[in-house]
Amino acid sequence: MRSANPSLKDSTFTHLKNQGLNRPMTLQGTVNKTFILLVLICATAFYTWNLYYDGKEIHGLLLVGVIGSLIVSLFTIFVPRAAPFSAPLYALLEGLALGGISAMYEDKYSGIATQAVVLTFSVLFALLIVYKLGWIKATRNFRVGVLSATLGIFIVYLVDLVLRFFGLQVPYLHETGWLGILISLVIVGVAALNLVLDFDFIERGVNRRAPKYMEWYAGFGLMITLVWLYVEILRLLSKIRR
Image (cartoon, rainbow, N blue to C red; front, side):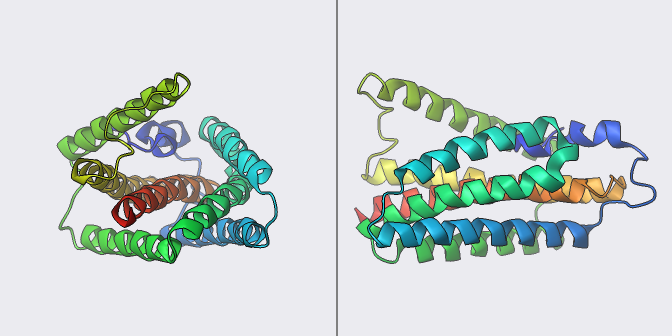
């Protein structure tokens, strides 16, 4: 059973059996690589954030960040061996997008970016503690449920994107009433539960002694989930503010 995160699907390790016998993937190594990627995202996010508040045009950088990170992430998913180089590039590009998006939200709702960051990492560490204590386990049914919900959300967002070309949108998805807030809460919950699948996937990769470069790939996959969670929390907080 694979993770709902497309970059952390279980089949990723299938063809890597025994490749990491000399220099296997480790949990500490994965944590270190994830931290490096986080620092890179913060660096470029800080850059576009400052540009926005200096009154500079950032829409070009925002577009480069969104499209560039999407292309690099897809390349990394299909070519995991390139992760030591593509994962840092993804982080830099993703930071450009997140910095601009965060600044625009912050401009409308003072303090919202800080709140979203604090909540994102609070959820991350809370779920990590719960997972390590064995209070929540990535069973087969759990994985199927989270995967189904994630795919459902993806389809809704895809439909909403298509409808916007015709001046329409999915009802309640962007609205600020109680139903709109409830929908955002559910999406945040699904994004958070993906972290549990990511933890489980990484743990199994370490146990299977995957090659060293998979630390970068695993860190990259975890960052995808964290970015999604952060953006959804931003959207939720903005609805509550409105």
